[in-house]
Image 1 (tube, rainbow, N blue to C red):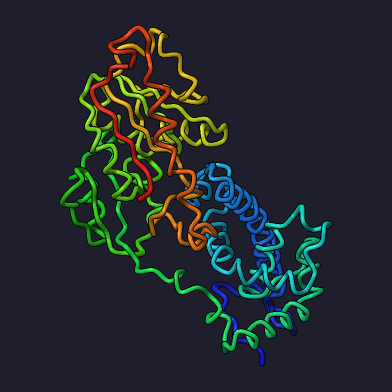
Image 2: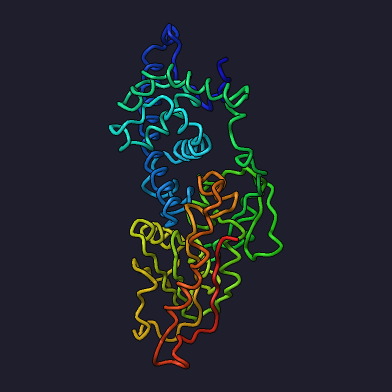
Length: 388
């Protein structure tokens, strides 16, 4: 029994007979360009996948899947995003097939994530040219891998690969939420622009948040590229709204990257006052700085350092009115929109181990200030957000 495979989203192969008469050079050039694009997309996807899996395993997130894919360093964002998501979806099957075949030896272990991505692309995605060493490995042993896959299906008593996938990977689509960046534009002008091509509604809870139909793709829309709107989930926006900072306040965002909540705070403050945005991870700090520049906020100071190391006696931290604490608990959080259901920790039930004591770590140390009332840092508001 040969298990039926998912259809390819884009077939890059060329018929054995070659290109049709009259267009050989154009067709060959198009094929070569597509193969090069696929080659580099797999490597970009492997880099993102490595950071996602390591962050998920260590509970020290390097960023959400989307924030990593849509960072400035990734060029082919659409193809990379699709490869990362689909590889994560099929990852348990890929691991079992590769283990059964014995291909993932110590030689290839250093490129483990690229092997996963390439194996998905060749076994379940599209027919591709063997343009790299990993591609050649998978193509050379494709029959062995397909045989292992078939045996797994027989052993599990299923008729297709899709039957092997966890039911948890199928989730109900949610609306596309976006937040209008009032530092650059108005909600009314954005609604007028988007209504030309989309159905747009105002959210009934979060100010300046708009709701569009599920599946609406705005990543390449000029409003997004210009920083006039941010593709931000409703739950994410509610954190800044809960803190409700007033214009002129001094606010600390303790775990700021990728920066969506930070710039939302700036918008709620009408760009007045000051925000100190801390981020421990160097790469995530770069993403934070990019988000701040994109938003147009000029009242945000970014710090690549640990919030827990803040010297509360430093005069620059005096008169802090509010603190936002939103530490990462996994590679992407738990919302469907942020794709946490694709992570290994989602099905293992291990997501909550670190977060169980995280509030105590953050809330016990940084607020102590021996020179202030009762030995504690005096602030008006603190919001602690975590996965629930």
